Structures are given as structure tokens and as C-alpha cells.
Image 1 (cartoon, helix red, strand yellow):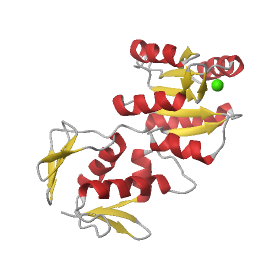
Image 2 (tube, helix red, strand yellow):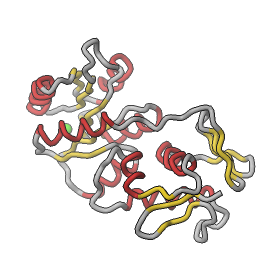
Image 3 (tube, protein in one colour):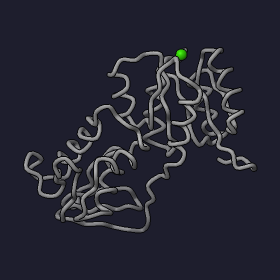
Amino acid sequence: MVDPEGRSVVLVVEDEESYQEALKVGLTVEGFVVVSATNLSEARELIETTKPDLILLDVMLPDGSGLDLCREICETKRIPVIMVSARTEELDVVLGLEIGAADYVTKPYRLRELVARMRVVLRRPAIESNDEIISFGNIRLDLTRRTVAKNDIVIELSRKEFDLLTLFATRLGQVVTREVCLDTLWWGLELSDTRTLDTHVKRLRQKIEDEPADPKHLLTIRGVGFRLDA
Ligand code: CA
């Protein structure tokens, strides 16, 4: 939802009052409309009623883990989520990104840094789907219904796996760089390593290739990226 003045609506899910207050003031000054929730149930309600453009989501909340809500949002809605956590273990970062978070910041963070990341995330358009069906080998990709079938049998892909396959399929026969993959799927996030992308490619191969270890369609172009061949 964009308000009449064109400002983006940000849902801040945070139970620490000091952060909640600071974000409300700071983000309003930066030109955002701020909606606040202090737990998961409030957040779920506000997502439905305010249709935010972006969600800042704390991990440790009084009624559960923000990671669960992140998973829900990423599976069912196209609202980017930035996870916010006091914990800095890499495991959390990777987990957050694998379940579809757009980015991740750890407390304490600088408002300026957070706002910069928010703007990157908001600039990134969702992958557009149109009335198209793309076929290669024994795979049929229906962009409208967001389904993939192998030998006419529907296969289950996560949202990210589907988006990644769409990215490759709409550039059939062309090399897609790792940078473009990260830019498109993870909103330009600079990962210290790109294991998340490799994990997704590996899972895609397991689902679409006859022999995942010797792929015929989804090929790695060493040092550059990937290419989907028909
Ligand atoms: Ca917390």
C-alpha cells in the first residue's frame, strides 16, 4: 500500500520499546509511514489491514519466533521482509535468507544503514509473471499459475526456487550471472558468501534434472553464473 503522498508503509515488528520508539521517529523523518506491532499476532493482523510495502521483523518476540512469521509471509505474500536480530550467529542469517528474507540486520544497527537497505529492498521490483508457458526438455513452467511440471507431473518448488527457475527460464540459453541472481532474488543483498544461491540451484537440480549430479539443463558457468539450456 502506498499512502496518498506516495510514502511506503513499513510494518515494524519489535517488542523492545526503545527500538520501537526510535524506529517510529527515525523512519517517519525518513519519509516512511510506520505501523507498529509488538508481537506476532498483532503483526499478522496488521499485515492484513495495512498491506505494508516492507516488514522489519525482530526474531525474538514474546509470542514466538519472527522466523516463523517470515516463512509464512514469504510463502504466501510478496512483501519483502528484513529480519532484525540481536543474535549474530551466521546460522540465523543463513536460515533467515533461506526462508526468503530480503535482508538481515543485527542490533545494534545504525538507522542510516537500515534505511539504505530498506530503500534497496523497496526499489527491487517483484519478478513479473505474464501469461506464459515455458517448456524445456521434459519440464513445463507455467508462469501464470506458478506451477512446474516434469513429465506432466507437478513438482513442488519453494517460492524462491520457482522465482530462480523463472529467472533462468525467461533467459533460456543465456548466461545469468550470480550477481543478477542475487540482485533479483535477494534484492541486491551482498552475501559474504553465496552459499544460499548455490543451495537453491542444487535443490532446483534435484527437482528438475534426471541426473542432478550431471545436469543437462541447469548448467554452472564457472566463475560467472548459470545457464538454462533447452
Ligand atoms: Ca525482541
